[in-house]
Structures are given as C-alpha cells and as structure tokens.
Amino acid sequence: MQKTTDSRQYYTKITTHVLQEMKLKGEKIAMLTAYDYSMAKILDDAGIDVILVGDSASNVMAGHKTTLPITLNDMIYHASSVMRAVTRALVVVDLPFGTYQGNSIEALNSAIRIMKEAGANAIKIEGGEEVIESVKRILSAGIPVMGHLGLTPQSIHKFGTYVVRATESDEAEKLIKDAHCLEEAGCFGIVLEKIPALLATQVTNETRIPTIGIGAGSGVDGQVLVLHDMLGITTKFSPRFLRRYHNLSEEIKGSVTAYIDDVKSVSFPNEREQY
Ligand code: KIV
Image (cartoon, rainbow, N blue to C red; front, top):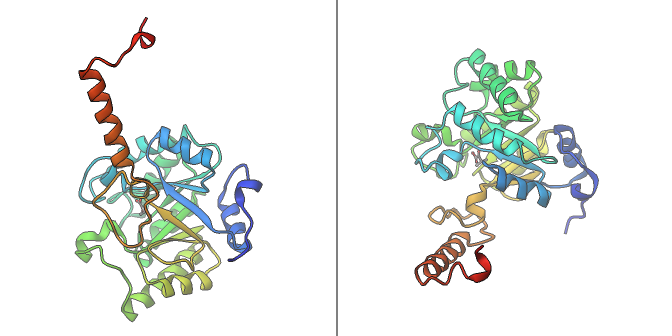
C-alpha cells in the first residue's frame, strides 16, 4: 500500500494551497457533499478535507429528477447553513444551471453572491473550453474555481443518459484538452465524474492541480461521493462506483417505527420522561 501523510494531523484549516500540497505529497483528498448545518458539522468534526455543497441538493434534498431546477438562492441557503458549521474543511459550492453558461458577467455575479452571502471558500462549474470565459472572469475577482469534467449532470438533456463518459477517443481527447484549459486558466482542482480509470489517471499525471474522482478509479488525487448515497439514505441510486458505508434508510425507518409503536402503546413518555 502507498505510504502517505494524513492531513488530519497537520492542518487546522484546509485551503486550496493545502490541496495542492497534498497532491505533491501524494496524500489523497477526501471530499463529500453536505447541504445543511448538522451534517456539515459531523463531516467537519470527522476530519473531511473538502465539503461540496453540490447541486445534487436538487435531487437528494428537494426530490427533483435532475440538478437543473435548483436556484442560486437555494444554493446560497444550503451553503450558508454549511458555512455556519464548518471550521476546518474547504467548502466548495456549485454554481447551479443557468447562472454561468454563456454570460461571463452573470457568472461572476453568481459567484460573488455565493462568496458574499454564504461566505463560501470556492465555487465549482461544470464544463471545459465552452465555459472558460466565465471561469477566467470569476478567477479575476479572486474567487477560487474548481472545474468538473466527464459526466456533467447539468447537461443531462444533451447527453440523454448517465452512462460512463469519454470512452471514445474523440471525447477522451476533448476531456484532456479541457483539463489543460482549466488548469491554464487557474482552476485549483477538477472533479472527474464517471470516466474510464485510465483516462482519469492520465489527466491526473498530466496536470499539476488536484483531480477529484467520482467513478473515475483510484489514480486520481482524491475522491468525492454524494453523502446521502454513501450513507444509504438514498436507496435507488446504485452505480457500481458507489460504496455504501451504511444503510441509514433502514436504520431511520426502524427508529421511527419503534417511536410510533411506543407512542401508540403509551410506553413513551414514561415517568422519567415527564415533569
Ligand atoms: O453536485 C454534486 O454532488 C456533484 C458531485 C457529484 C461531484 O457535483
């Protein structure tokens, strides 16, 4: 097994520079999503390096089928809740669909709202060359930007499915070009979603900025999962890259059933639980 350092022993605050150091040292970066105060506090206390306030909140918090409906105001609400909990992790917030594509001034204004109103540390944008003007303008305001290539859920209607991306050479070449483009523009990292492991490793080796994979194998600089998926709160989403660490949905149902039984049988509250 590869010998690495452990950021939990060295850093009291994770910054984009720390992530860069971790890549240089060969220490893997652990990232998870969170959308609310209580979960974010647990993740931060556990020593997670990066918290992503992902637009997957649209799916797992709001119940939408895609990430498209979530608004900038929704993202600011979720990000503000997370920021009130976090002291150590770097908090990255997704710019939602329709707030940065095709208009770099709108992109900058959206990013500024997230930084100012939520107090976030960085933002994330989906896409490569086609959003580079927006990426550069946001960076020019001193706002750290993370890229996101491969499966980009905000483009689901263009692709039609959530299958693995960049399996054909032309798409793989574009992805490599886009990764270089994002690095040259000044992004501090790139999420690589659902692409072949060999391609993700190649991008990781060819770029100086950290790559964070989700369904991209182990050759990347870090991993990210959606919290509700890895805890087993969601149950229907089961791609092969997802490792479930818990079956919280069943545990919560068990507790709620026990509570209902206790209320109905008047075994709750007992004498010690009343005044
Ligand atoms: O919104 C999100 O949760 C994401 C991750 C899947 C990387 O973008």
